[in-house]
Image (cartoon, rainbow, N blue to C red; front, side, top):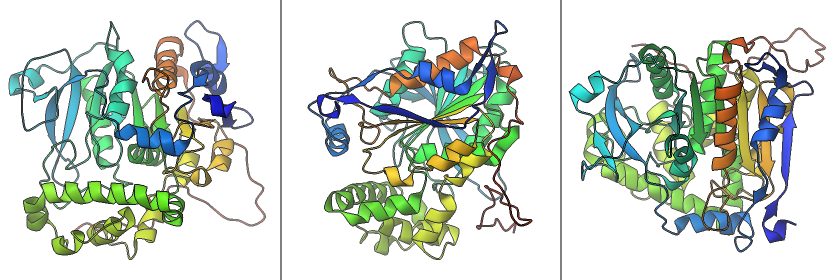
Length: 422
């Protein structure tokens, strides 16, 4: 049936998924919630495999109009200094700022001073993919049902540093385990909107960052639930897969070019704040070459593969202690199937992996131009926010225990890169 555009859907989960209590007092579990949230995946049959689906994203489409106002946050970390931009979804406005993406304008100081609220509307924090931003079409498709036509959600997008026309104001750029900005926004939201249940969605590289964040926070994570879409999970495996074929090298070339273009937009800041070799970056062709010239130099990794292993989020799946849904297409040519940590999802009752046999990378184009991934995202978030007693979610559920022969300890979030305070 795949050739007619009807994708097969599968769920990978723990033998005993996390038990959830509904607001009416009845019981359900995370698997049932996810299964009910995921509709039939009927895609455009003309876009018959992951390559065609993914390449179709190059076709320009307007997508749903989402309006934003931007706030520049000063980083509160003593090592990871600088600023980053957060775009908040707002009502339609006519303000035009040519320096920002379409339909985006800055908050005035007076407007932002009034943003705090004690309402209990659910709030979604979004992370975009590599070199993207709040303007991305795949992102707007996913949040439009939550905020348009009477949608009750509040939404903001954390832009990676330098992305979406934001400025680079320190030597701290972004990478695949750059969790400090999402952590600051979550903590700020917890204080600014004390009654709002907080959720998060991440796409591609943002999915990897969000998975790492949820794993790092563990049982202390302030989020009530999270969804990740098109997560590459194991970055070293994904990188090797890209280098294996001519089409893979084409994707890597496109991503490398996009990252090089991003660096070029911030040439003055890069030369002022970093010790990167700008001329060598100009000779980069593929994404792994960019990571070799930028990520290894910035963060101190000896090779790009060491960076990939350290920044991968596959182990982080084991440490997650919030309801967590991952959506992946098995024919994704960028976040490839062999990088998906199926066994880790089986071990953790807080996590559910939903895979589709078709869909490409952040594509899932339906007949008529819609994006299928928007529906399971919105359905899951809507069910969690409206039907589940979020205060009753336990943080001590145990997964399937491994039989241990020796006295050993595995810490899924134990990192190799260490922060040295200076």
